[in-house]
Image (tube, rainbow over all chains, first blue to last red; front, top):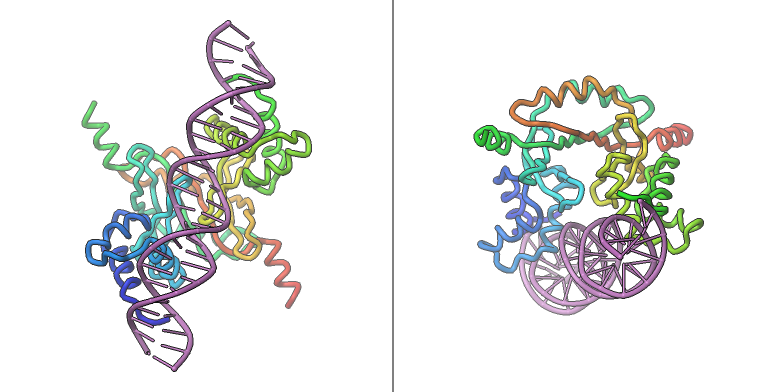
Length: 129
Length: 129
DNA sequence: TTAACTGCAAATCTTTTGCACAATC
DNA sequence: GATTGTGCAAAAGATTTGCAGTTAA
């Protein structure tokens, strides 16, 4: 694989952001510095970056895929109020042990998605009371 | 909500099957006994059935949604070889405890998706050696 | 120079939706 | 009879792909 300006920009953008952007959002952001960047390229490069393990894909039912540059193993909460992803730091070891204990399979990765209300929406609710 | 023949058929089909079918697969199957069944109706009814908690939606990145009628809380393995879902009976209690221990959020549901090789593909591999 | 990468547009796939008709209560 | 549900087709949204031109090695 050889160097590509676009792929580098996309990687840096995902690593920089903590809000789990979609391909569309990444493309829109980067057009400020790279006006001819196409959404097709963003999708292609994001797929490559996921394949080589530099970033992670976060899927939520009914939503466009989101992308995450955080290297530490962690999970996600999908907020039913604000429809945003929040990182969730569930201890990895006990999770890993539970997955590893599954008989008869070979697990090489796993994702936990929690559905509910995120901390900022919850704080707002409490303020309103 | 009132009775509907189609919704009933769809529910029974999902409850009967253990292979986590997609909307398309459910529609194709049911056309044997209900030839004018439309895919739009299947999607509509599946959404309703998920909403009222009779079935569950299982999402896998890059795949059409799958549907699951099993009532017992359980998780899923997405097999990278055969591209099928397999039910995974990770003990619910320890998982629930880990999720409940997340500070500052309100969790009302969660899903664990494991990626790897399912038991039948693994068995085939071992047989080939 | 040549193979990989890009932009663009069209295609594909999944899911939703508008509307006229049918079925349920 | 009022209203919910359906079939059909079109639309919408997300993602992939073909192709001709560009760029890195």
